[in-house]
Image 1 (cartoon, rainbow, N blue to C red):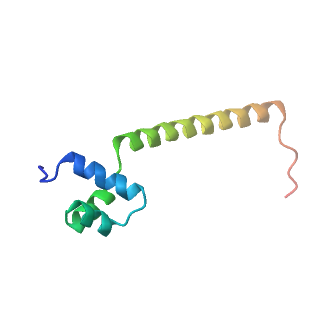
Image 2: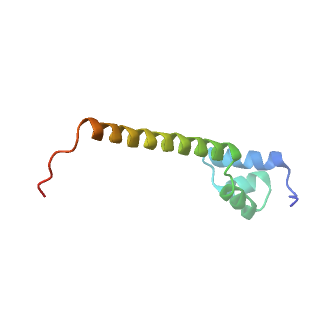
Image 3: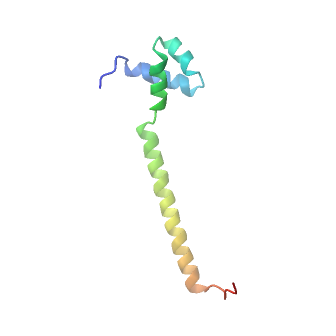
Length: 85
């Protein structure tokens, strides 16, 4: 899908949005339709943010696995107390 707007324009719009400017103001400054800016804002998930998210998920999965192994080891060394309930 070709876009009539250059990539540099989109990059600038996203930069202005990340600086806290309103989408309507960004559209006015850059001379593009506000709907375009809103669409760009909604779809600004970048591959690098997805990569960071996947890396963090992997770290958390490894941490959960370590915790489960620790619990299993502790159960072998120190069995649970008698349960009276």
